[in-house]
Length: 259
Image 1 (tube, one colour):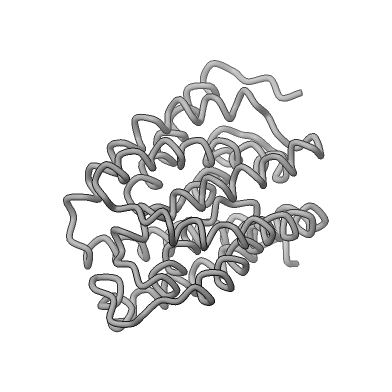
Image 2 (cartoon, helix red, strand yellow):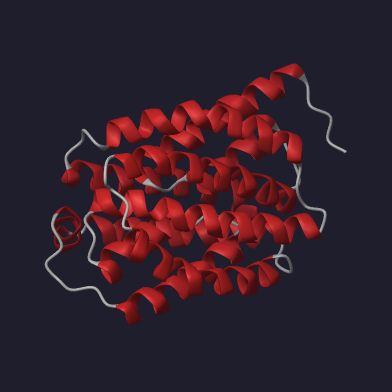
């Protein structure tokens, strides 16, 4: 049992607000931010339980943040479901393997993956594709990339937004704003399935999840409001820069895990 102080409860709500804002703004960063915030800011010391707890919070926040993006016509539900359905199978397989991997090693490996994706997203051709896609997506790409992203999402215990957004740009030929909005559907589904698997193993704290969700409601709607008013080029670069900053911090905090 993890007894929270009043300060830790407040910090949990603030953490949820940050997580919700990131989801609403760039469609990612939910668990990437939620996990380190819960461990290093709130002081929750169990990595696997932190993964399960934040997976549920990120899932609910993603579904809530889907609403303003859908109202702004930034969500392609058809492509979102085509991406998510095989992804759910990948999530379950990935979560099974993730539970067998030491928690801090998971965080370290994931940070390296984040940097690789961010560098790729900052390339000129990727920025241009995110602004206005010049290639054609395909159902086969959506299904295959969806499964791969789902597997990584389940393995690392994340909603997967920072993997889903580039995947939708590449496989679905969506621009960055459409990919952000559509990704929330997959983030919600992937996170929910991950949370269920961790709950079955006793690795989930419902009270902390509730605090995160409470903060995430306001943060998410604020992020979605700003996302609709930023240029697609700037939004793409913000997406990549946030990835790099958080990844460097996670590498620093978990470097001892590989020694």
